[in-house]
Length: 344
Image 1 (cartoon, helix red, strand yellow):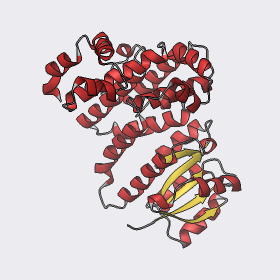
Image 2 (cartoon, one colour):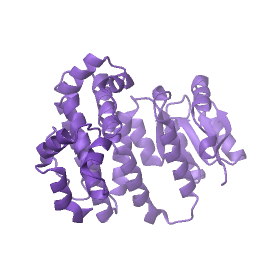
Image 3 (tube, rainbow, N blue to C red):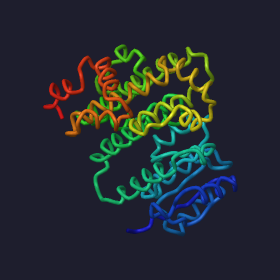
Image 4 (cartoon, rainbow, N blue to C red):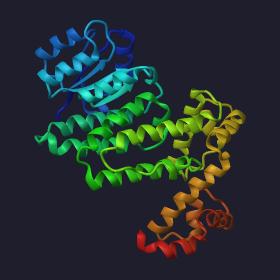
């Protein structure tokens, strides 16, 4: 597998050093070709040396990252750009993604973000771009895949950078997504409903294609208003959404409230109160909600006896599991399996 040659462009030496040390370059077949402190020096470099991937600060002195991205699209369209940004750069992020940047990294979250997931996504995009295919036929497909990745959770709701990326990819996918885009959106909304079941989703049905970006913006505004009624700070709301995603992604992990609260840097008692006020469910209620949802899938996709399904979904007592399952679905686990087995 050919190495991806990368160039870091940032006027802050500490940021360049942080990227060198934190990013698992070798794991994803990426070789650091060099560094540059300005966009002008980066241009000189790419004109002399082969570069596949350029990570550029969006607000550098002199030529900005936006201008650099635009220039590279014209002079070196084969070079893929990932922008380095801060939370407040919302408008810049949107513009960079419109100009052709493939992803973004928030510099203030280098130590906290899932760098493996980010680099997997970035390296895959670079490698796939090497295939000779008509852009018009692949762009909506690539945008849908990117949208599916970005929409896997609810963290984007409280993050300007995440929302900017979602909006940009949805605009590309909305060009000619067809039925596949509808399925992608339906799956995304199902995941959001699972994580925030008390929100009034019925008031925000999916629109016709062509109106999707504006629908997403209205939906996000409505969810944010709903979350902010709890009167907590943006940081606390973000922490609770992160906890919600963690629980939803690991329904059978049996994690305790103390472990979850510690992972988002909140005390156990404060986390419990915040979680209830923001999601309108207690931590225990939400855990049971997620576990029953996971059990529904397991009942239809496996032949496990009910007691095994209960155990794998975090219920030590089969009778209690059956009781909770019936409260949420209206059916006992065995009845649910029998009634919906043909949908598996």
